[in-house]
Length: 67
Image (cartoon, rainbow, N blue to C red; front, side):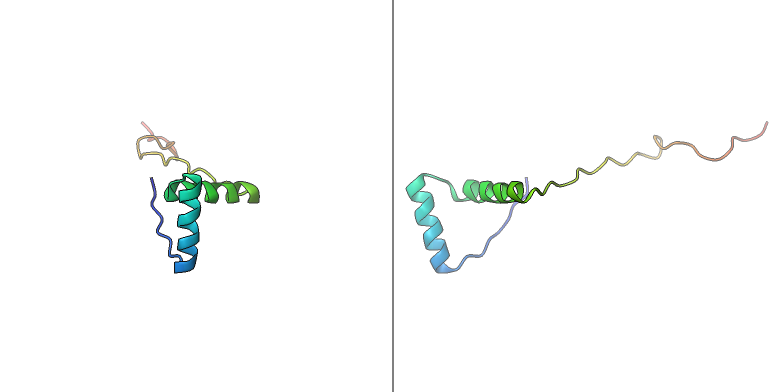
């Protein structure tokens, strides 16, 4: 799992801390949910990476050796 470090002003940190305490949220959980909700609203979906084939799995190219 990836980690993100966020720098907040003192005032914003106080507001965020007070909100989390009042609503019973853990800061990291709420931050992750807010990021996910924002990306969902924006319709942004990451493209999954395709696994790379190992050399033995690659399709052979070229002609076979003549006998």
